[in-house]
Structures are given as C-alpha cells and as structure tokens.
Picture (cartoon, rainbow, N blue to C red):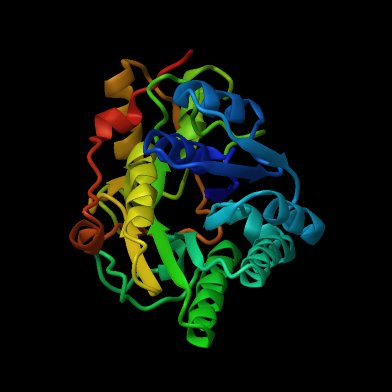
Length: 325
C-alpha cells in the first residue's frame, strides 16, 4: 500500500517524500508543476535511491483523481497541493478558493468512494490570524487574515465536519509556521518560479545576484526592530513532523498540531543571521507594509513533542546555510 502525496514535487512535499522513502514507505506523487519543477521528482528518486509513480496534472480534474486512485493502491493521503502566496491571494481570492477547495474536495470524495480514511492536511499558522496571545497554542481563536488563510481554515472545517459525519476518519491537521532551508545535497530547496513570495528564497536570489535587494515590508510593527516576527522552521524538521504524524495515525479523530520551533525572529534578524552564516552582505530597503501581513507569529509546539514525539532540531544558522550543487 502507498501514500498519495499531493503537491509532492513542491518545496515541503519533496522533502517529505525523501523522509517517507527513507522510512520505508511507498509513495505516489501528483503535482501540476505550477509552482514546482519536475526535476524535483528526479532528485527525490536520486537522493532516496527508490522509485515511485509520478502523475503530472491538476487535481481540480476529477477524472485524473479517479485515475490515480483506480491505478494505485492508496491507503493514506498527505495533501500539500494548493496555492500558497498571501499577497497573490489578496489580489486574486477567487482563484485561491477555487483551487484550494476543489482539489481538496475531489481528493476526499475519491477517498470516501474507496473507504480510505487516513488524511494528513498541510495547514498553516495563517489560520490564527493576528493572534491575541503568544506563543500560539492549537486551541487559540481561529480567524484568518487573508484569503489564503481563509482557504486553510475552510478546509480545516470541512475535515472536522467530515469526521463528525463519519467517525472512521483519521485526520491530522498540521499547522506549520515559516519553513526555510533545504536538503544538504543542495538538490531540493525553496526555488519558486518567478519572483519569490517568501522571504528566504528572496534573500537567496539577492545573494546569487539575481535580484538587487530584499524588500522588507514594513518597519513600524510593534516588534524588536519594527519588522515582522515569524517562527522559522527548517523544512527537514517539517518533513520529519509529517512522518511522525503518519506513524501516530492509530486512533480515528481530528488531531491538530503546530509544527514550529517556538522561537520568533524578525525579518532583519533573519537577514543578519544569513549574512553571518554565509559570510556575505544582503542589501535591503524598507517598503510599505504588505496586505494581509501581521506583526508577530510564533508557535507553542509542545503538543507535537508530547503526542508525536517530534521536536524541531535545526538551529537558525543551519536554516540559513546555503548549499548549491
């Protein structure tokens, strides 16, 4: 039996595939490659030394979803597939609602049809909106601050309602914070198409000379230096969290976990750590605040440590270390 990894050629999905294969799982990967590259599939196979089936296509196409479930022996799904840029979601909310909701519903319907009930969902700290208290616990008030966050929150509600209607479902919702870093081979990294939406790949492109300077969106937040504070977590730690959640999928229910380090760093602190680690200078300019952004966001990850036996291990310096092939 195999695990279907949707969005498995993407940044977090590809690292999770490597970890799953290392632990002896069989996987099937589907990705439309809108914000990823097919070379990631080759690299996953090369790093792991293992083969798997890859489907290129859009999960809004129910015929493709049915084809995958008919051809493959799937027993669990880890669902990464979805649009993920906060700014873009503000500019084009309908595209986000259409893509993120329909793909999820199609997967759920295919699973129901075949009596498959194990589902891990890639959620986000954006469901907490502008948190009232810090660090953020899983029982914090949920209110998204942008359309991307709303899609995550709506899918979480769909999954809760799904379990309420059928208690055979075993659903894990992983709310992770700000993944950065890459595989030590340099083969897998956050390398989006076009101008990056996330901070670390933007910094790296400035480091490489592809971009002139980093745009720091806002320096008037109520934080240590006026720039936004986030809980940055190494993507390999994040992948380990998914593997840990899969290994603990024994009891039906809806299980929710934060995956973060529990420590917040500002944008300027991250830039300075990158400069120190890679012995370079990263030019930046202060730009106006970006729509949908908040001041502070960092996790209380203690529940995942207690119940999953998982804890982030990588230091900030390890997160910032750049490796090129």
